[in-house]
Amino acid sequence: MRIDLNADLGEGMDDGTADAAMLGVVSSANVACGGHAGDGASMRAVCEIAVSRGVSIGAHVSYPDVSGFGRVAMDLAPDDLLDSLTGQLDRLTTAALGAGGRVTFVKPHGALYHRVAVDPEVAEVVVRLCRGAGLAVVGLPASVVLLQAEAAGLATVPEAFADRGYLPGGGLVPRTETGAVLHDPHEVTQRMVGLVRDGTLTAADGTSVQVTARSICVHSDTPGAVQIARSVRAGLVAAGVHIVAAT
Image 1: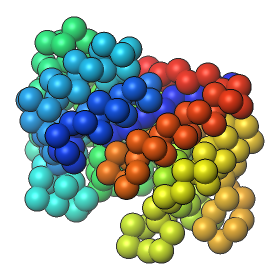
Image 2: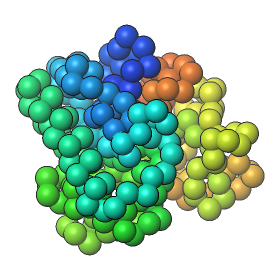
Image 3: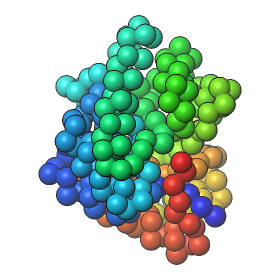
Image 4: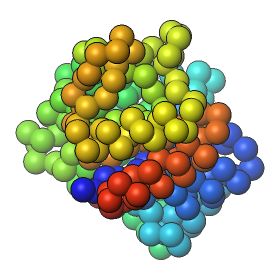
């Protein structure tokens, strides 16, 4: 058994200490590249540590929405959105190359992540971005963006979320509702071991939901994120799971 562990990094949550700690745990880093957070200095700092630790680098692209942290949907013309995402990817590519690495995948952030899961027009923008750069796409299992990416011949990485509650249909519990974010490292670890072993998670209503994933995300802005990530990694390794980057 093998799985990728990823985290959203470079989002300015502290002085970079948590990012550095998380990069000692995960196998892939989703690096904020200016849309919702991040700048040249933060990108370079994350990329340098990622390269030194053999962690894959991905572009965590977003709607251009720093004030809303990329969690507010925006109705941009497709070409305007593509221009914004291309600029974000180019900035991270420069930072990665400067650190001796390269970008290997794209994972949309926040509102854009959820929009491309269901909206073919917006999903096509992300697919165009990735096709032009030859990058893999990370997203929700069976989402529109992954289906389009597969049809375009791109590598796809369906992911699960370690620290998020799930709905019976396989979607995430909205952050405005109770049970959206999970905080107990032991509970989260057991859920992720079960996911890798059985391909299922327990939904918020107690039912079992099937989730096919090649990567597991731990949000770096969840309180205790590093402790959760370390617990998940240790639990998976103890269960005989190999932690390997997906791209």
